[in-house]
Length: 114
Length: 109
Image 1 (spheres, each protein chain N blue to C red):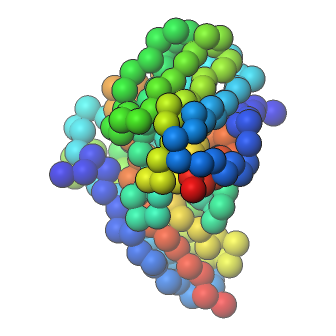
Image 2: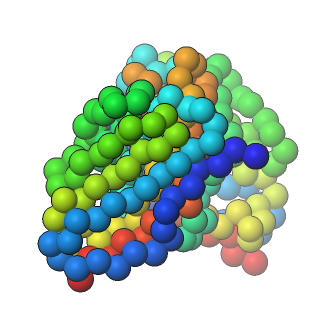
């Protein structure tokens, strides 16, 4: 059974804290993605990675960075958390090589920044 | 112009009726099209994908694709209360999947 896991379901942090969100996939997928989802705004792509140590900016990268040291793990970092980063964060992975490949999502992390 | 557009809804459909969800996309080069279902508080899960013009059926679900009109739709027959969810249309574009903002569907008993 394919699986994408995220380190926390719920997280509460204070403004200015450094926050790490971890994502692990067990499907040997090349591509991994971080989204945030807010009511009325849909899924917005923050960063994605096509391979180890590679990263590309998505639509809303400001205030975030990422790290991919191993193929199965993709981390999202909030260098200095702000209240407008309160959101649901979704990690996803996808195999490369075909446009028909499905994208699998993790369960999500609901982050609240106070 | 958004790359993938959907009516946000809510779309309210009586139980047992057909629910029709629509989506348009802007990238004419897109080859694959997906429908994801997302229950409240959960992550999206794939329910259908289509890549050829025409219809594709899977149980109560039918996906329809018209590349000339850049239009994708999802029909849900015999709608059940368990179909109440947000449905995300998604399009493959340059190795990424671009998602619409979703249509909220509510099946009323």
